[in-house]
Image (cartoon, rainbow, N blue to C red; front, side, top):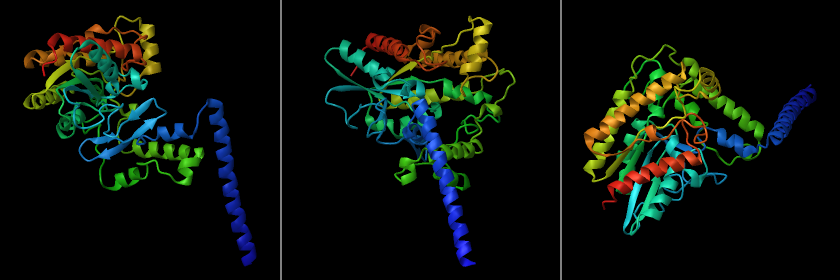
Length: 373
């Protein structure tokens, strides 16, 4: 009886291992045909490049890299700059603030902060210009405001460049609007939910994490399932009635004014940029519909291309009004950069050429106004 029981248990264990091993082989063959490796699955883990922060939600994991296309340095910024919290003697330090459009969805030397640094150091004589990429994907002006006050001031910038709008805009289509954006952005919480999320927070060095594709497929699927029940930002939950008032415009204005106030209190110059989109009301209806279906990410209106354009213009109007009222440097990238697929990777993220134009426009206004200190 005992021998039979042991035999059955052994066969059951062997069967499970055989099935899991078979799944591993099948997924490895499938990935090989698609040119993928285990690192691609690790990268899909939403927190692989981030760690939780009690006041901002997430910050970059340090150090971290992704196949040399993305490098997070020891201080938590994308790229190699700065090497130290202290400025190089005589250097003029600029910090670029924003979301993924600042962080960049391009190679390391193609982001707009890197290209801005190259332009200024080539064209401004007698000064070393340090440009820091402080963009973090998904950040709204809420996170950037807190990040500026609690973290970026320590780097004693001479100037900040603010490039925001699209992540704030998304809040208009999430139910139960709140001006602090807690209706759709949530800090990491200590409690029942975080106990589940904590299981996915780190990419460790266990045997499965280092060697099993099947493990990562299951883990990522489970993580997405958990997150979908904690954070109400899936397009299925979007408000699909036409937006009559872009409610995020008021907190957007408040947050930028507060960033400017903090900067001025610390003697920091401010550059405000309007936001550029690869969307146009002049497009034929067929192109709009095709683009809406194929490229509509979370940040865009669930209703129409035109509504997204109207939303960004409402926020760009706020930026222009603030720049005039506060006498800060303004660059109208939203008005200068055209909706041109040769300049963008999608509806909002500039490619290398788009970032070159973005950097060029910012550099020109900085040079026109002068490097003051």
